[in-house]
Length: 303
Image 1 (cartoon, rainbow, N blue to C red):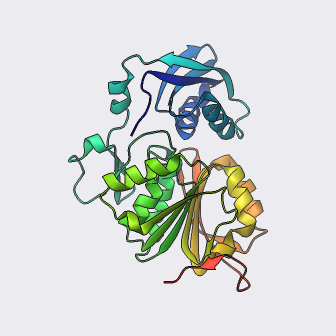
Image 2 (image 1 turned 90 degrees about the horizontal axis):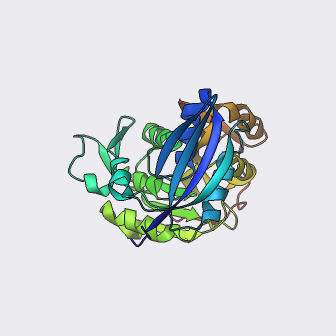
């Protein structure tokens, strides 16, 4: 995988001292591959570093999205910094991580260090969100291990690194349909599929905005680990794309957004059947509570 390692982008965010953990979590959610913290009296400043495989505007937009629910935290600086022996530091930032009862997330250079009895998810920490080290991704993995059934057909909306697609295949999915708005994700997704020794024929990828012109219905499971605004945008139509007994797992929300999400959910034909929180983050499993008229979604998968 080709990246320009000669320089990095950085963004600096500032927030109250009591939100120290939140700053670190938001930086990771935005796609940062490393941070440095500075004391600014009653405030904390966190400089986050990003790979140069995307331009600075891409990372500014990503940070803007994750800061929407945190008005007390603001972006104060951004720019470019030359590579300063980051290669080893960056690799050290991704040790093997056990998630839930079933999984362990590993960068490929840790192959051979898998804990006995856990399902390894090898993810190359690159430009796409979803290394497995953020709480929102861990929440989805935990909810998957509690609800997943082998043979399911899965849609992974906003796939990023493909970690949820990979987990689905390793749990026995028959087929996974992965989608992302960023076409550059495709190369990274295929690379991560290969380093996990999975059959690429069981995964399809296309570029698209959430469920807009989504060509299939009848999904057994639909996954979306994004942030709250895109999740809310999908809610009114999402039930059309899942099977009568299908489920939806959504994550990327902080606990203080739970009420807003549930209010929007009450206007749909979906209800909560499972949920999980980790630190300040929350995820949920949804299922249909009312019938959907036949033929209202896209093309039905043939099982």
